[in-house]
Image (tube, rainbow over all chains, first blue to last red; front, side, top):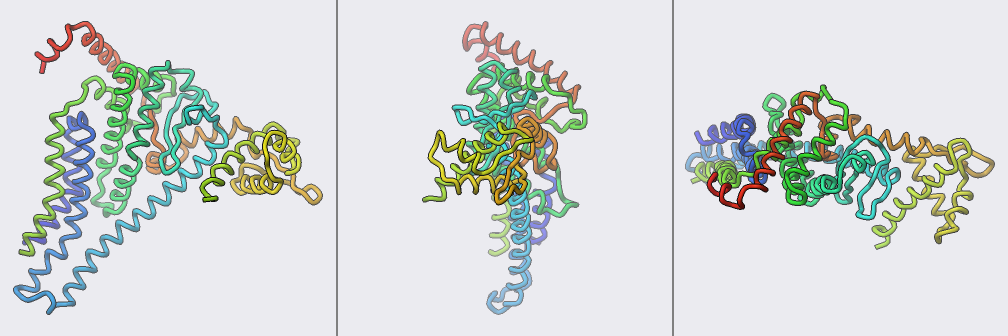
Length: 280
Length: 146
């Protein structure tokens, strides 16, 4: 029974839980805890899948010592190893692709952009934009347009937001979820996880912006940049700006964090507990 | 560690060399010697270093070159403005969406006109709240509301 429960848990954590979590927008008010819950749910799903074969061993071996059934052990190890390889291959593919894109972009930015005294890179372009290139040699890039559009307080908010991404290595978090996303069979893939995690990462960086310049300056910066750009109808409902504005209006909700941490603990502990139960 | 110190320096030099080529212009270009002679005025630099840097830039397709006798004449592949515009475009929409979003983190990732109207309405709310907080007696009303 327990191997089946583990398999069910894997499907639940990989496929069902993201939908449930994404339907709880209030957790966005505690983005740090919510991100941990998302990570725990995803990792829990992977662990549950990895544990299915080992948990099935006692079922087939009965009361015998496992050493009497080397073939069974090998089969179980192969099943789990195949899953690990799948995740690793996906990780390698995603990582290589992203790093190559970043490196190429950084090289050109370094050549074409002006170097600000604070280590910021400034692109001589009228479109207002601000972004960071994460990685070992990271950059915060601003356009002349954003420097011209935003007053100092708002600009400080934007820079604090980007630096928070770099400091907290949000890129690794996004990479982790992209890897998991690509290693799950496409029928079980949920776009919700990736979309929600992206949003939470932005909400978390906005917190840093608020700590630097306050809610009003952060919100004004977002609106000013949005207004200076052409509306992008093709983006549809997938953009983060409206939700982030709502979160700036609502403010944080620290008590929700406790619930999110509890979800994280359960999601992570459940597969381990089931494996232990299967073996005892 | 010679590698870690020389790598960023080469990157800086690429920028300086590129700037000289942009100054030289798209039609004239410059030879290694010409770039070297300009750079030599305000820094200690080896002729071979300039050669290496130009070679790297050619590999990155940022410069083109034409044989001139026994030397190469180098030209910027694009004007600085064009390259800037291209870089901006790439950050905004060129890459495949999933990759772009994981590779670069933007402060603002675009919005439809409806969404822009939406966030403007919420901005008013954020501002009103901040004003209320500033005018209310500190703590009291906030505490009651909790």
